[in-house]
Amino acid sequence: MLPIREGFIVAGILFTLGVVGVLVRRNLLFVLMSIEIMLNAAGLAFVIAGTRWGQPDGQVMFLFILAMAAAEVSVGLGLVLELYHQFKTLDTDAISRMKG
Image (cartoon, rainbow, N blue to C red; front, side, top):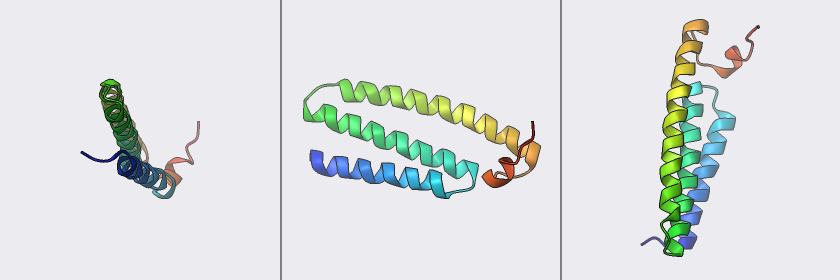
């Protein structure tokens, strides 16, 4: 079993890597993957906290996070495909110059 301190450190490192990926990357696919990493880090923190007190609440919250991540991926990939068809690039700088 993973000790609570080390588990939260791992979750914090994963969340920080996700934030850095969102802020640094210019490709929309990498931004979506970074958001997924952040969601998984939050889920890991919930599971660790639930394990600490012997409650299944953390696992239930993780299931909600997984469902939300699946919805985010489906909507996000649909938007990415549409933006690629429209602009022929996934670069966020080029897409940010949208008119309308």
